[in-house]
Length: 315
Image 1: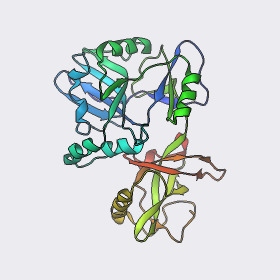
Image 2: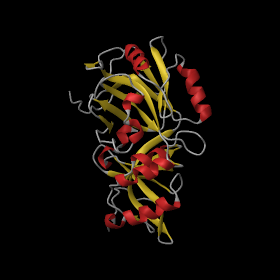
Image 3: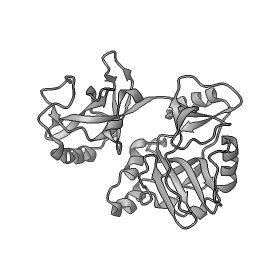
Image 4: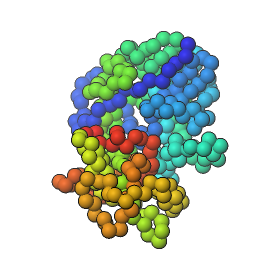
């Protein structure tokens, strides 16, 4: 039986931690959502946008070494640790962003990953997405063998305590799940909720500034509900290395345009080089101002997201 990729269940944002015995909380890891499909003949990996990642993470392909099930769909997040020992989105994107597959072996030596598994959707020839989360967690525990690159995400009954611990560790946040919830394929509702410790978004690059011929700042934008591309601020600090900035300088050459892509007038307009808005990037920031711009943005990593998805409505 061939297992076709599914769009995974997504949590909705919340500011309140729900109360009740039916709720459990899990750490929200700053990684890449990856689903593993084993139909009994071959193992394939796909992200939440249904883009294949099988070749990117070869250490996950020997599924018999970490899962007893003869066929299975596992849901989890691939993470990589930074120099501080904490999950780093920039580091995991060094693996997930590879486009020349011959580089996988080299980058694998530089960036180790861990697959944090939190759900199972299909097991031993049976779809179990209609099972309660509590039952799926029990099944997952029975079939999995944790190891160096494989971990099961633990569940906690006290969401407030977990969130305080996450804040102290500087982690991304928590996900709160109803133990009675079914797994809604291509769904997104309040049965799964996420509470962030810090704010982030995916923005589109609409322009750059240069210093000594090298890009040193990005002019960022989002689309409003009428399809207008709106400037929200510029960022020049974060996780990009000197090599990343040089590569970006080369990458933007065919994207340069004469007309400003933003509907509103950015700062630094006299210094800006305008670009077709196709490059997307993950940004952390402090807060929104009244003029719909972000304070203290910090660049995390370039991402493979369609610019049209980067809208104010999803903030």
